[in-house]
Each structure stands twice: as structure tokens, then as C-alpha cells.
Image (cartoon, rainbow, N blue to C red; front, side):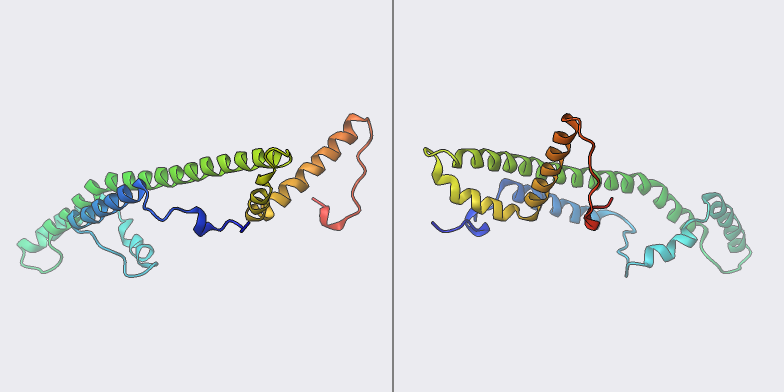
Length: 190
């Protein structure tokens, strides 16, 4: 019997989630095009660089707009007051939209982890049941699959078995009334 491989297990057909996810990506990209003043940062540090002047209070910007308006009426050049107010109005209006996008991204990431957890939990249950069933003569043909599952689970299974053995030894010592003896293994110090 050949061992299972991921390419054998994963279906080649696209899931319905792939179709809906692609549609959502298209909508988000279209939305990006529809947002006025949408700017993509040139590099990772650009937002940090801009945040120094972005942290100027709205009151300061409004007062500066009044001064700029006065300067315009006096024929002195400088930033346009209407433009300054427009930029501030954009920031005020789209702040809640950005907050909602952040929340949506956080909830979507949580949903992804929850889905992975559900699948992982179900897979671990299948593995535990298959291990028990592989020991029976009636269902012993599961043994090679259990070996494949064990290999795929890898280090995580070894660590879990090690922790379970330590807990079992500790509970055996405490229930028998024995005082736990400190380990002399330097790697086991905590």
C-alpha cells in the first residue's frame, strides 16, 4: 500500500469558498478604486513618516485654514483653505470606514483560525479513533493509514505523548503518596 500524500488527499476541484472569496476580493479592489483620495504607501515607513504631521489637531488645521483664507484675501500665496478643510473632512468621514475594515480583517482572521481549528480538531478525533480501530483485527487495514497520519502529525504528537507520560507519572506519584523527586536532567529545569 502506498503512503498518502497531500496531492492525493486534496481535491483538484475548486471549493465554493474559493469562488466567493474571489468575488469579495474583486469587490474590495473595486471599492478601493471608488474611495476618493485613496493613496497606496510607497514603502513600509511612509505611513510612520506621515503620522508626525497627521497628528496635528483638527482645531489647529481649522485655525490654519482661517489664516490661509485671510492670506488669500490679502493676495499672499500659501495653502488653499478650502483644500485644507476638504482634506480634514475626508479624514473625518473615512476614519470610521478604516476602523470597520480593521475590525472586519480581525474578525475574518479569527474566522480563518476557527475554521482551521475545527478541521484540526476533527482530524485529531479521526486519528485517535483510527488508532483504536487499527488495533482490532476486523479493522486492522487502517494501520498503514494510522502510520501515515502519525508521520504527518510529526513532532506535535511526540510532544503530546511526552507531556502525557510526564502527567501520568506525576499523578501516579501523587496518588501513591510519594513525594515527587526532582529531575537531575539539566534540560528539564523550568
